[in-house]
Amino acid sequence: MALAGGDPGEVRLASFREHGAISYDETERAKAILACAVSGVSFWLAAVPKFTTVHPDTLIVGAGVAGIQAALEIAEAGKHVYLVERTGTIGGHMAMFDKTFPTLDCAACILTPKMVAVGQHEMIELFTMSEVEVVAGVPGDYRVTIRRQPRRVDQDACVTCGACSEACPVTVPSEFDCGIASRNAIYMPFPQAVPNAYLVDAASCRYVQSGGEKCGVCARKCPKECINLDEEVERVEVKVGSIVLATGYDVYDATRIERYGYGVYPNVLTALEFERLTNASGPTGGRIVTRTLRHDKRAKADQWVFDLAGSAPRSVAIVHCVGSRDHNHNPYCSRVCCMYSLKFAHLVREKLPDAECYEFYIDMRAFGKGYEEFAERIKQEGTFVVRGRSAKVTAADGRMLIRGRTF
Ligand SMILES: Cc1cc2nc3c(=O)[nH]c(=O)nc-3n(C[C@H](O)[C@H](O)[C@H](O)COP(=O)(O)OP(=O)(O)OC[C@H]3O[C@@H](n4cnc5c(N)ncnc54)[C@H](O)[C@@H]3O)c2cc1C
Ligand code: SF4
Ligand code: SF4
Image 1 (spheres, rainbow, N blue to C red):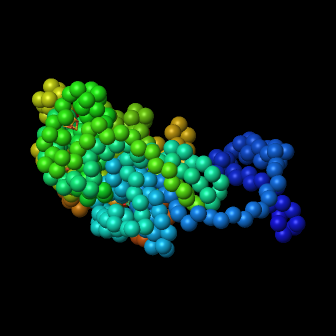
Image 2 (tube, protein in one colour):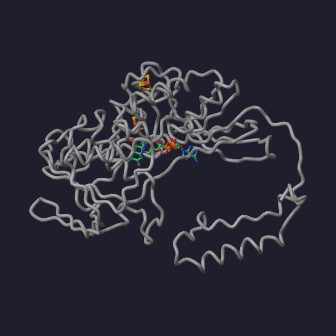
Image 3 (tube, rainbow, N blue to C red):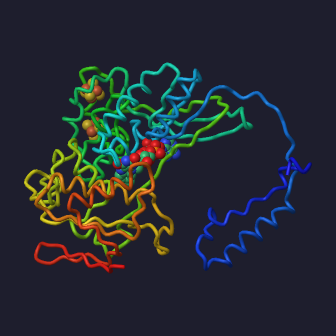
């Protein structure tokens, strides 16, 4: 448009793919997308080129591996970075993994040096337990308000001795272990967390929930006197020229697909739960076992738990595309479950050589470098790779049965 002497602002993009008209029978949707684009022309405003000084600092929201890598590269280029992370540590999902596809490299060996580098880099200012509250200003010159939740532990003074956690009477499911292990109300997300310090989970802490009337035992036990249970929310304003959003993903809620029995049968797991089960730092030290029923004295109830008393399964089924490529859930491909499912098959065959392993897939989307070779390797390792949709999981006599339809 510019070359033709027109205003580039007059160009309207009608993206069929991005707006969901992706299959052949979606002509009506495509027409609607086109109509919206054309109607938008009447609201056209001239795009007037403007030159402005760009503030050199950058804000990155989300400190998973993507935010970490972006922060390190920008900081290495000599620019100041504010890295804002919602949870108490950086690392994101990758910190939960044992091995990574397609090379089966150790995830922690790749990630933790980067996490440490972020924590020590003089050009990176880290805000954990924080979120962006307000973004104001104009492109190139933003004013950002960051809201920091109280950690209630002085992260510079904490020596991670764990005395506080040992004394804490509250036990809740651990987010890092996807609920298949537990933590206390004062805890470290995982041993290599950055910042390497404990934190108080306000939602489960008796002191916070009772308005300061109950408990407080952790503060009394801390040898460094670095716990302040009354610490309050803090707001910090920073100026930046650019903002990188690296907020990653959430996993699909598997309870919404009732036919798979997640939440009903104790040995139906989500992919992230399986990651934690197979991880050497997980509740069974990486052993793949079934859950056992235990009596929890504190909860006064029987609970299904993963521990070393569990037995090795004789057969494992891995279902692809759960919540994806299904018009009742997410119509799109997750772009990741084929590959991590193949990784799981490798781990099952490696750790349980006597067990049978089945993969149920719709299409094998092994699209990246080394992925196709990885898929071939899994077949050579003896996994039964079945093309078809698994329809239902049922259970009888302590065993589960999975029925499917092959294509
Ligand atoms: C089960 C499973 C296994 C996988 N295995 C592999 C593998 O073997 N190899 C591989 O290459 N890939 C694998 N992946 C994909 C891999 O997890 C992702 O590609 C990668 O971890 C994404 O990193 P990220 O930084 O973009 O996002 P995330 O790891 O999701 O990090 C995002 C971060 O942003 C934070 N955040 C979110 N919202 C906000 C907010 N509003 N404010 C502040 N912070 C926020 C989150 O707390 C989080 O720390 C797997 C994925 C799954 C689900
Ligand atoms: S004050 Fe809260 S975190 Fe500290 S011991 Fe009591 S319940 Fe646990
Ligand atoms: S007792 Fe104090 S120093 Fe020790 S881990 Fe807890 S907060 Fe840190």
